[in-house]
Image (cartoon, rainbow, N blue to C red):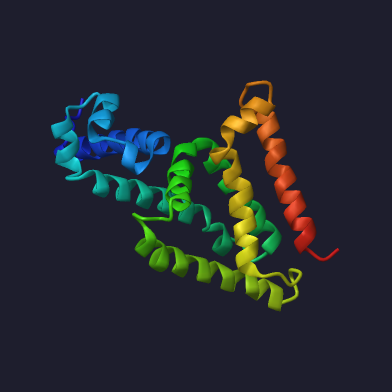
Length: 206
């Protein structure tokens, strides 16, 4: 058996802390979360948490960074396909899948925005704005080429974000309305396809 290197141990340690921290921040918010609780849930001494992240703020910012990076990867679909039907379908489905696989990340982001983005306003005014403008240009290029109906690209992005992240941020409501159970794989697939169909029907020329 190959011994675990220090680099590998550090990577695993960071991944564990980030996974637990994402859940704690999602449930408690930044103010309510503590490094002590994160350490207990990760089954690590508080000192170990501070070894990787010197403060709660730095840990929180890293969680936000990780969420954003995952969302950015989902948006690669805009560049992978020249056909807007294929690109938007892949993007919507990828965002829906992230709402199911990483619901806590979406909730951390939502909580931050709801409270006025006190910890990440600079981040939004730089990274998020730059990303958003690049995606808007891509959508506008499809409109200019007659491939999509004229719409405001930014409002289209808002609609996709709101619709897809609903399945993470309001999962409790969805479960209650689904007889107290999470959506089955089949039902979730139907939800994804419904969203794709509705959005594309409003965008594509017949």
